Image 1: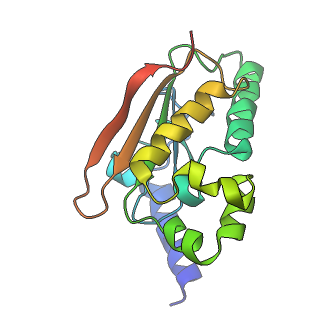
Image 2 (image 1 turned 120 degrees about the vertical axis):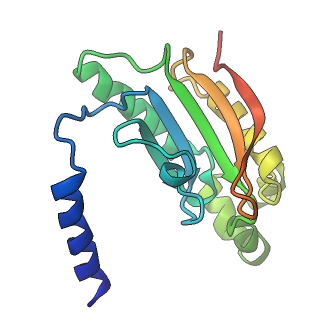
Length: 178
């Protein structure tokens, strides 16, 4: 059986047993989680998220960049079309993790990571790519400075330890901006 056949089989099981057609387009817990593409760090699994609970945005390193800000801005537009507002009463989680593969890229292809992070190579150290605890603080601050992200969000910065399966709160929940 090929992997694609396996996916189709699992989808058929999902459609028959767990599909919820009543789910709305916007997350019912009014949450957005920004995380890494690393398959060990799946927010759905590590937080035991229910279907439709949160919007999960994943990229390399779980880093906040222009694309993440644009995605949140687009989510706000989608919400407005649906007659809702994104921001006040919403939760925004920045989730980094230990042993991230971005560190290997940083060592072996810093120009590639600099381009991805949209900074000159000489400024890459300022983003603390090698330190997820410092990096999550930097990314929460980047969200605070992003005018396209509504100020009413409550934001927190977490680091997931791939060796223990536990999260640590590095940036406690607080309002994004006053």
